[in-house]
Image (cartoon, rainbow, N blue to C red; front, side, top):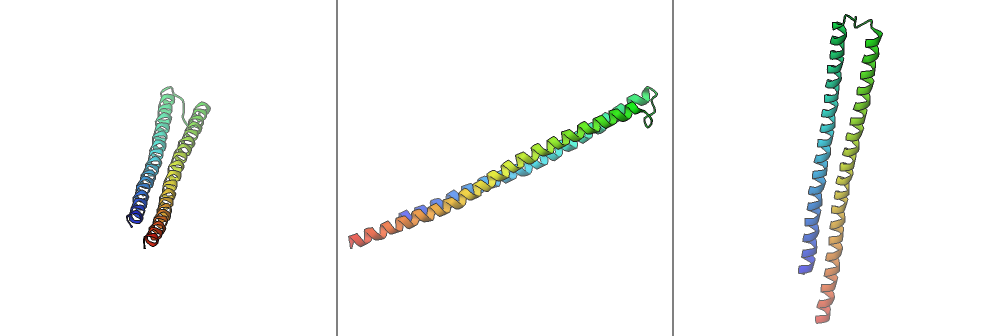
Length: 137
């Protein structure tokens, strides 16, 4: 009878361990999203600073900001570079998040498998105990 209880108890403990592991992965995934969002905000701020600096530099040289082809080209180039950077940041963040969520799902599956395996071991132990009891009788 002790074998049966040990199998069930062990399975439950293993399931709980995998549940905690899954929760940890999910928390890391949430943090990865926040981190990617923060990097995107930082890149946007960097773009705005660069554009302001370019505008101030051009104005200091006496170039009219709205009519200068050079300024428009620089402005467009900086915006395109920032867009590419932000897409890259977002893609890397999504990839990392997906990886962590996949690990979380895997841990949950392992927890369910541990319970099934525990039930199987408990059943096997119960059958063995019943046969041993019959042989003893």
